[in-house]
Image: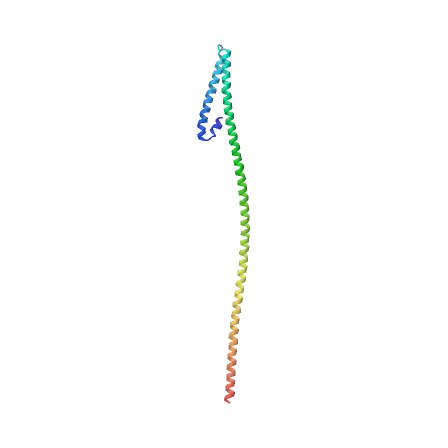
Amino acid sequence: MDLEARSLQPSMKAALLAKLREYKTDLNNLKSEVKRVTTSSNVSLTARDDLLESGRVDTLAVSNDQKGRLLMSTERLNQSSDRIKEGRKTMLETEELGVSILQDLHQQRQSLLHAHTTLHGVDDNISKSKKILSAMSRRMSRNKWIVGSLMIALVLAIIIILYFKLTH
């Protein structure tokens, strides 16, 4: 009982410890009375029976009080066990949710890495295409200049040939 009273909340603890001290002193008083009665030879048998009967009543009252406290403590223990079970259930559900979220994040990371790799491949292809288009553009410009130069040369040649034909 002493250990149980010490483990309770401070507000209840002081009152219960005081009652416990009272019970202990009552018990010690009763024990000393029993010793005194058993050792004294001039105490009558009826007085002895009266004394023992009152001790039994006190013992029954203390026993009933202890049973009540034991039942109350058992109920509290059961409630605490239920709360622990609920907390564990909640913890397991939270853990499952966390695992699911981590799996989703892993899949998204893999998708992002794949997209990143693909993007670099596309970027490389765009760079190659850009180089090819600029090379084609340079060739086209060069070909335009060559064709333009040939046309100017032919026009000059025709003009020169016409000049010599007309002047002679």
